[in-house]
Amino acid sequence: MRLPLISVRASSWCTTMGTDGFHIFYNPAWTAGLSDAQLRGVIAHELLHVVFAHVLRRNTRDPKLWNIACDYAINILLHERGFRLPEGGALDSQFVGMSSEAIYELLKADQDSKIPTILTAGLSPDDENGILEDVGADLLDPDDPRVGAARPADSPDHEQIGSIIEDLREDCRAALAGNAGAWFSDECERADAALIDWRALMRNWLYDRIRCDWSLWPPNKKHIHRGLILPSVGSPAPGHLVFAVDTSGSMHIKAIASIYAEIAAFRETFPCRLTVLQADTDITSIATYGAADGAEIPETFSVVGRGGTDFRAVFDYTENSMAEDSEPATAVVFATDGYGTFPVAPPLLPVIWLRLRNGLAAERFPFGSVVTLPTQ
Image 1 (spheres, helix red, strand yellow):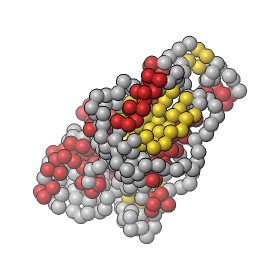
Image 2: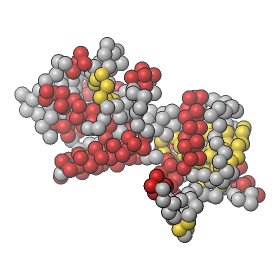
Image 3: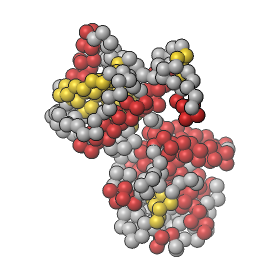
Image 4: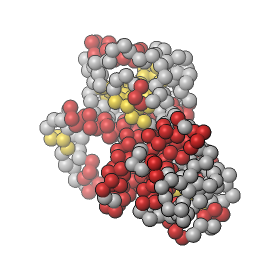
């Protein structure tokens, strides 16, 4: 599978098998009691949780109910492909072809009849699948310090993980056809919405709108490791980007720190003129960096604000910049949990919202493109 399997002994947070979205953790005391067929089935089960990005797609949903909904969605596919699951695998034929989100809404509306005793429906009576007991949740919180402590230090970065997952999807697609293949593709599309890399979104925006002639600056990065300095097409970044950070009281310091790490990564990818704002109800801090001047984002920084949240202050600033600056802002990236006052009318500039995973639902942002930060 190309996914790391990690043994977790004497663990209270992983009693069976689970995943944080990439690593697969297992309790050997539990797996030792499985048959070979059941072990293959539960490993395939965790694989599909990874492929469909179920950890990231939960957002603000109830964790246990979301876990059960995802289990229903993938176990039907596994059952149809001949996999065997351990006792406790949620399986119900009424959910055939439904997305995890749709199943969740049905379960949420009818918890009393669906959750305490989940029985198989429309399956042969001698089938060993079904749910007879609560075997524990297998979608693990990647931010849980116990999960983090169990992960290897040399874990791949988000870009490498995305490449591995895409390879796994291609392997799965090759084995699926018909309705199963269509449902698999639909789940993958929903997963992509949760896994999208905001830097990739920015690159697409740039190349669509600022494509220009071939140039030796910046050089083509694909060939630098070979000692070849070849031209690249397009500008690497807009002339002036405003990167706003929500520093209101609802933003956890850990989340703000992860955002600054994203800004540092952005700086390495796009050495454009950059203005970094901190804001709550007003602009509380302004830092500027020139285009390709080598200035680094500081490893330590002071957080200013911690009051309420009013997004209008940032957009007022950018509109004034457009009117007064010789090199006005050309786009805004705003990192926030989404809880605050939005402008009545959309701003004139393109906007990318970097939404915290447990923040305001993406569909409630009134304008701009919304992507979810992979970590907090």
